[in-house]
Length: 125
Image (cartoon, rainbow, N blue to C red; front, side, top):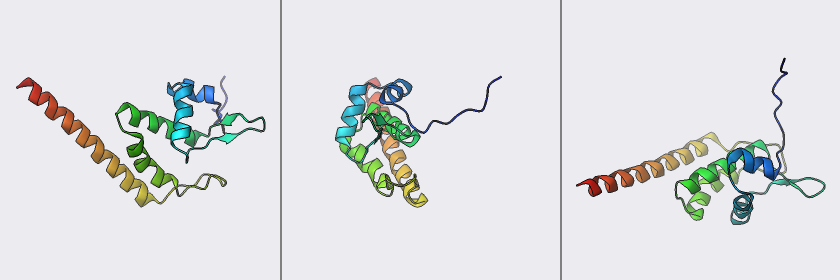
């Protein structure tokens, strides 16, 4: 008989990389490139990642795989994160700002799809 599913508060770098399919080198690089992204540290100095960090890392991975530059990723993600105080329990930025950020992301994705489709049409004619 299985018990209730336990939600973890923190994950190690190894667990994050394993769960999300990224290398530890990539994770460290993103931490350096995006200074707003700072995982917590244990008393022994090990990096600890919250579930919200995992969501952010997954979004970073998706943007990188889609070919976005670091500057573009920062312009999409960091305005939303500036409203979060890392010293207090997790807070959500205002809903309107999140929706506007998502709208902008979707517009970028649509333009990327359109340009890919136009390129394929040009190649086939």
